[in-house]
Image 1 (cartoon, one colour):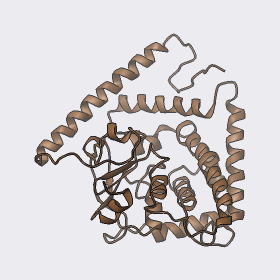
Image 2 (cartoon, one colour; image 1 turned 90 degrees about the horizontal axis):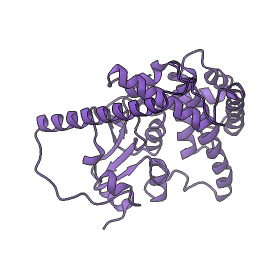
Image 3 (cartoon, rainbow, N blue to C red; image 1 turned 90 degrees about the vertical axis):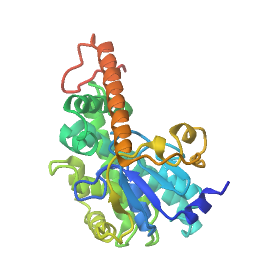
Image 4 (cartoon, rainbow, N blue to C red; image 1 turned 30 degrees about the horizontal axis):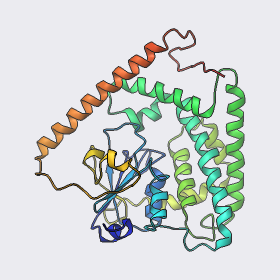
Amino acid sequence: MASAAAEWEAAARKVLVARKPGFGLPTACPACLPAVLYLRMAQVPFDIHVDTSFPDAEHIPYVEFGECVAFNNEKGGVIEYLKEEKIVDLTSKLPSDSYSDLTSTKAMVSTWLADALQYELWVVTDRSIAQDIYYSDLSWPIGKILHWKKTRDVKQLLGITKLNAAEREEEIYRNANAAYDALSMRLGDQAFLFDNSPTDVDALFLGHALFVLNALPGTSTLRSYLQNYDNLVNCAERLKVQLMKTDSSAAGSVSGSGSSDPSSSSTSRKGASSGQSYKPKPKAKKERTEEEKKFRRRTKYFLATQLVAVLVFLSIMGGADNPELDDEYDVEYED
């Protein structure tokens, strides 16, 4: 079996499956945007396929090439997979003494800034932004329930309770501002954060910055903190112009939109979770007509949404005795 790197080289087409565009960005999803930017920084020709079947699934984004697929929730995500398999590694040319700084900077972006963005998107802002990104293709009740569940999950992840909500908010924003300050000092007047050369850290930060500047409202505290650092904002705007080309010849053009089912991707979800991020495709099946494909996707979508609705209903009923639960997602957690 050929290695993933060999498959990549031989593949006539590379496809990044992501969520739909929005806010003037090629994808409105903050988890998908860094993967798009990383491939564009590497000048890799690829297509973006929009997935609307799995509103907030953790395996999105994922990349397909040849007979292989790499999911976001395996091997550290798409970018880490491409680096580890020596397919696309923008850090390979950095001097060895830069790696420790790069690692610590990456950790800061992946924790402090990621936490702050999650906090603003799911806890602070109203439902409209998340609705546009994840749930606009769902019926209103299901979208509202899924948003409530995600908000609860984010609060739990960030350790937010009624007792410490104000304290945690202050800490989250303090860490985010400290991260912006450190990144501003690191960037200076350079084009990129390290040795004037793009790295995965640039892709992660740029994805964060573009989402904050373009998707979050003008009243956003996180946005106001970022706008205090002119070099970070100018860098983000400059790279947006360079990387967000919309002509059909640009790397990362959107070739189409619709549903993308991982069960029909290069590997099945079962195979992908078995410890390998890619496997050969099974023997080709008889080609379905376009009508059959649409019907199959709609059937899966209907069944999945009904299952989610039932599970969420059961979870709500299980917590119905909790007097602290209200319509505004204000959840009391155990300390």
